[in-house]
Length: 319
Image 1 (tube, rainbow, N blue to C red):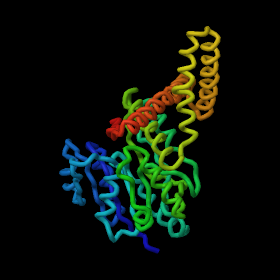
Image 2: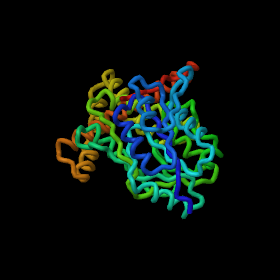
Image 3: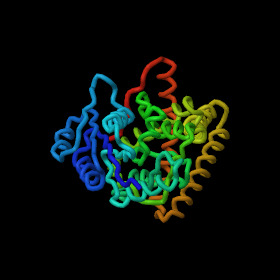
Image 4: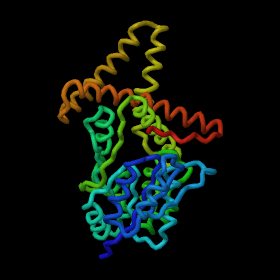
């Protein structure tokens, strides 16, 4: 069994987090390639100081995570297995062995990923919500995030990542892998520690905007994320508009809409309480989950406005 793999780390202005990501990858990977997307904090030089291969993307073209990963893939033409790592993530030492064993045991597995978790989930409610979102369903047809182990030939066979996407490039790639007959596995094993450092509402809001953008674009490309789109538009756009329209016809409409929100918030509150949150933190989580639907609806609307106008949406950065 081939137990060697290469690693591609992508990043932009990740600072000390990048050095941790690279050092962890170097201890287990055959080769490490770092792809930098226009950092201004000296990330590229710091990576060279660790002895890894560095690729600096040309700023003449828009930066995207997909473009960075494709550059890493192209730089490793002889790779059989590739571990992609985001620059704010640290690889678990035992993960590569678990991932490679799974790929060898499941010949139709095109990629595999495991549990990603936050470095400091209790530092803020935003960090906790991010940690909660990393819990993906286990199985052979789950959609990954940025960190994963993939068969390089399988990824090449579907054309790599779609570099035009500013969000949702991982889901898009998984859809194309599945369409080509590959399985996209999530297994129960710790994979990466993620350091979101979301300590205020603004970056969390931008992250939710980006999610909404991805839902809209994945719907166009694959008819995907239908449930997410419906929930975002219902709670984030339709019901608020109905409530505002109720001002013209009477208070009963507004009261009915408010009751729907209260019922939904209470259901989510109980859900988060069942996960061990105290009453105050559970209320915060339920409120953020609902507020996130508004941000997602705005992100979806922005995508459609740009599409109709024939414009390319700028990269949505949240850090």
